[in-house]
Length: 399
Image 1: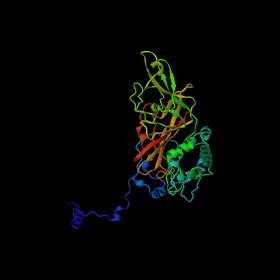
Image 2: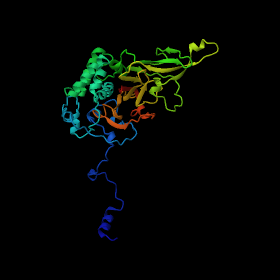
Image 3: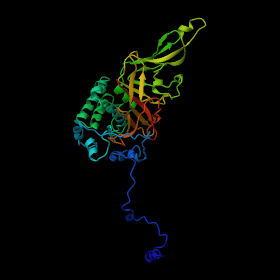
Image 4: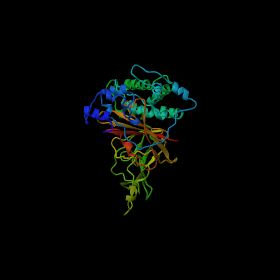
């Protein structure tokens, strides 16, 4: 061998030295960087989570989107950065605390942080969607949301105080929880007990105003028969979409059943025979069903748990005598059957989709993808991580 020193060392140590796990040898080894979409923020909340192991959670994989996002600039940015360094005894973090650590996207929507001492996931999921509808345009959405119900009037007032910096997001949420508890203590309990997302959505958003209903029309004789919702749909702010085995696809459509199909935005054939034509000797024809919008709704909360909807359209186009009513998807709420936990996705005004789980992502939302209009299926919106399934979709009026 050309190098006597190496030859002497091999004679002493052998050619196959034993593998050692001496920690001193591991010094300086850099742990591989995590996927930034899987970083768990606010770990003090994750560690106190007794419902599930947060390390086992993985975010859903949406289509890749390489869109560059720009930070906040111009008037008002300095004030936003000033708000606030408040950190209360429950561990609530704020924008300033997050920004100082260098984490988070300045363009990211904000979400409510889960309370491990008094379970808040149902409130976090719904309020995060509503807050991010209100935040980009409070002058437009303030009056719209306040006019829905007395509870929404109170919620918007808390949103305003959060925006002013006089309340943290969690203080605003807890104000609403206290009001709901005083109103319906059994439905909205405190402590480590679950609240029903269905009851919460209806309590916050439900009203008696009817915006439209399906009607059956005979294309042969123009006979029209109004419906009461037993077979068709009556459209309220909160509407349950039921499965309908009699509903047929639009002529020539290969797409999966969507919300527009469930709402009969286009005329759909039915098995019902026209009573007017049936009275004529030897003639009959079938009725067609279609939605007719009388008043444009500002917000629609559509219950999706038990129906045949397979596709959540980015945009709904509902027919009206005043033209089409356009509503864009603003949020989806999910439920885990294993853990009983609720999470949500927020769709920002530019179509960006963000995932929120107050127990894992904390204040931050995780950017996933950009929604594409048209007939794209967007099937990934139907599920969250693990066993999470969509239970509510929330649409907001564009005009």
